Length: 217
Figure: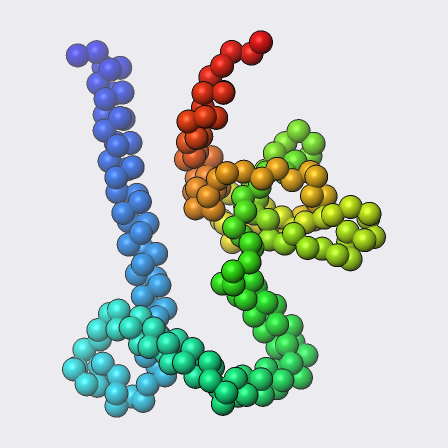
């Protein structure tokens, strides 16, 4: 056998093996990390009621169940009249603390925007950034910027552009609505494309593929 061909075959096997194990190991690591964080919620229980004291050893994953119960009970509490009053009183107290009110208010506004029925992070768009002719994939986070739109005389929107490999870091840009191109791409597909640095590209719909395949006139 040709040594070059043998080397290429070994490389192909190695790459195929990496493509199988890398997603599996990454998934195991992320899930294990999340379970470890959730297990920390067991510290809210008295020492006598923790798994180590009851059964004599730790039970991984029990914290996730406990966290789910805590979240459900909290939601049940805040949906009644007494719970809403307690929340209002607690928020009023937090808003009196200079640094805490900024952090709490920002996180609350972000959470309400993401988990509400608004269009935040539900529209994948394409904008010319960081220069004309260079396009970036982003997410439209707000279509209503009244003050900026009034001052500039044109409707402006907010677009969040994620960094490759690290989707939690990125840039927030305010652009004229006319310069934003909406895509028929799902948020999940866009996130995969960004995280993989464009290696995983969503497949175009059949109609668009047919149009792209046509030779230019």
